[in-house]
Amino acid sequence: MKLALFFISAFVTAVSASNVLDLDQSNFDKVVGKGKPALVEFFAPWCGHCKNLAPTYEQLADAFAHAKDKVIIAKVDADGAGKPIGKKYDVKGYPTLKWFDAAGKDEKYESGRDLDSLADFVTQKSGVKSNIKPPPPPETTILDADNFDKVVLNPTNNVLVSFTAPWCGHCKNLKPTYEQVAKTFNPEGNCIVANINADDEMNRDIAKKYDVSSFPTIKFFSADNKDGIAYEGGRSEADFVKYLNEKCNTQRQVGGGLNEKAGRLPAFDALAHKFYAAAANSRQTILNEARTLAKIATHGVDHYLKVMEKVVANGDGYVAKEMKRLGSLMGKSTLAQSKIDELQIKINVLRSFVEEPKAARDEAEL
Image (tube, rainbow, N blue to C red; front, side):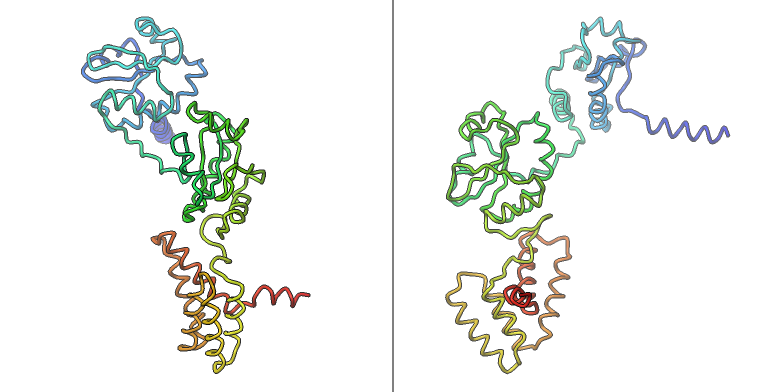
């Protein structure tokens, strides 16, 4: 029983271990001003703001745990055992954060209470870098007064813009979905998913220009209409993807990548199916027909012609074999998105040979 309690106690101690150093009258002067700089939080157990700060302050201490011999992250219960210390340093509200240099000279910390702001301050003052890993860059194109016109008013760009504010709850809820949509459309050079902090002082004139009076407001600026069309559709990923595919003439799918329509040309779909269904001795004639049609087609016909040529040379088995090969390549996680898109288009074209064209299916259903 005692052994079990020992292990439970050890487990609880390990789980609750903190890198924030607790200071009071018994140890404050032995630690602060003794050769190492320190950031000290003066708090009160009943203080709501202190409770809100506590998780972030713990993260801050963890971020500098590798450098405890160079910088200290500490706290003092200034309404309890550390009350005399709080009085000594003129603490009148909670939480109060103070920076003490290596000699113990103090200054009040008055910057942001988020992790990045706190960590940047400690690094600036101590020269010690935190172990915080920088977040990945946002997929969304970030706009401001300096680049808004360059991106949005560019006549080659179709741009979906969300006008947001940092304090807006609905904007925060939208952000993960909006980021995923931006990631999905990043391979499309002229279909851009962008965001602007419309509550920033430098950007307010832009918000006013486009009649933004609430957040988030979403507007679409097409290549040929820069007035900004209000987006009034749903806020799901599927809603945004459908809308942008229609507006940008793209063929992206929810979750990323191209859909099964990408690269398909109705006229060549019909020829491909006719070619594959024909007898072997008739295929060269259909191939010649496809080559003639290709001369007046704008783009996207090369894959169709290549498959026809391979089938003429190698027989029906080529289509199934090539689809299997491309499918296995698609499964490789190291491929760039541009390469994945290229493979998807080739697979889509191969399907046109073995699938009945949509027009024929619709007619059959009638």
